[in-house]
Amino acid sequence: MEWSREERYTRLEDVSEAYISELTKKVSAGPYRQKFHIQPKTGLLNDPNGFSYYNGQYHLFYQWFPLGPVHGVKYWYHVASDNLVDWQDLGIAMAPDTEYDSHGVFSGTGFVENDQLHLFYTGNTRTEDWTRIPYQCHAVMGSDNQIKKDAEPLISDSPIGYTDNFRDPKVIEQVGRYYCIIGAETSDHQGAIAYYVSKDLKDWTYQQAIALKGNIASENQGFMWECPDYFELADQGVLLFSPQGMEPEGDAYHNIYQSGYLVGEPLDFATGEFQVTEAFNELDRGFDFYAPQTMTDPQGRQLLVGWLGLPGVDCVTDAFGWAHCLTIPRELSLQNGKLYQRPVPELAALRGKAVAKEMKLENETLLAKEFSARTYELKATFKDIKGTRVGLAFRKGAEEATYFYYDLAAKKLVFDRSQSGKSVTDEYGTVRRCAFSEEALEIRLFMDESSVEIFVNDGLEVFTARIYSQSDHNHVQFFADGQASVTATQWEI
Ligand code: FRU
Image (cartoon, rainbow, N blue to C red; front, side):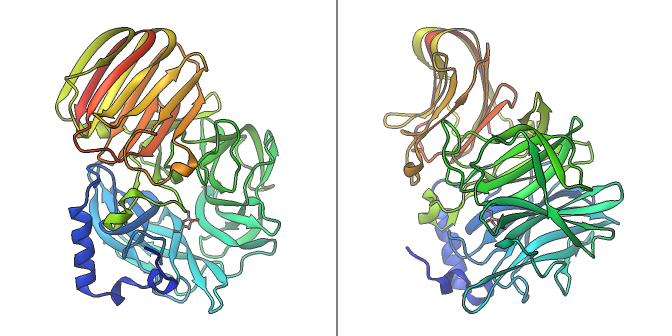
């Protein structure tokens, strides 16, 4: 069903209770609801926002359109957690209820200062002739979790040299100064990251666009860089962003939009220069991942949560009144110029009954009859690998299966969801690949009702995707075209 502009810009308070209760019924009566991922109770979820640790809890917000599975007028929805596993529902955090965010409380971040959680976000507005005017706004949250928006935006006029695609502020502190980086499209339609400086989080002065120097080979950088993030790990700077408009290159960039990072010398905000040492690398090799956001927690961990979805593509659950979810939280580390992502150890609390199995495979496919869970964590280690192909099939049944394997001949990891079940995004391809040539293969796979996150060799590569398979298709098979010794454990979730 096509939604009219008027329908998409209808606010929650303008629909009847009956509408919401019908929609809620439709969502809960439908298939594919997740068990351990953050998902919207109705409507559409997109970017994670304001990910932070404040007042003894992890706080996470997300972009939300309550009334249906479309990109309508956005709210911030709030959840909080003591342990990154159990999330408490704190309801709507910010509604599009001021003249500076009338057409959406768009994405932004959190920053803790003076016992308050400062929220920086983009207020999206449209004029009558539908010209977009973005404002960079600020609100504070106190220990009672009540949020108060400032009366006026922090930044009202975007600087000259950019289009109206100017949004998603992230605030960083460096030696007593605050910097706010903002995702942007330049007037000549190049992706960019603009930044401002402030002494007090209130008055912000525009500096320039971050100037990338060095190893940035590709011309193919897209027209708009959404959701920028910057942090330092192992004395290196990491600039993370979600470019729109990159063309596919080999195995890379096959999703509608991308999400990745540059590594370099620590960013010098005085000059605005970022000396790049590692060219753009995708964060995720799968089908459904976008707009991730990171935070540093009290243990000093750099944690990441992403949107397990993409803009501009339909979702199988649209028919049931909701769309998308967030990824599980992941801890980042930087090794040899590459970001590794590992599921946070806290997720072990989800583990229920465990079943283990050891196999020696020789040119065969083996059904692991013991593995029968629907939602689970699976760890499988393949050693003594010889031949051309080793891997596994999961969510397998009479008609469907999803395949993940190491193609030794091509030196690639391959994720094939062409036979996974229902799909609405096949136009972007049904197989994803990335280069891989390691002696052993370790797969850690988190299977929820309708998503899978596959962490390979301790987070070296990650594949994230939605999968919509039949409810009785729960077999796991292991295979080797050649040889492999496999040790596997499945924990029911
Ligand atoms: C990324 C994005 C952001 C924007 C938000 C609106 O998915 O387009 O740039 O702030 O979503 O929901």
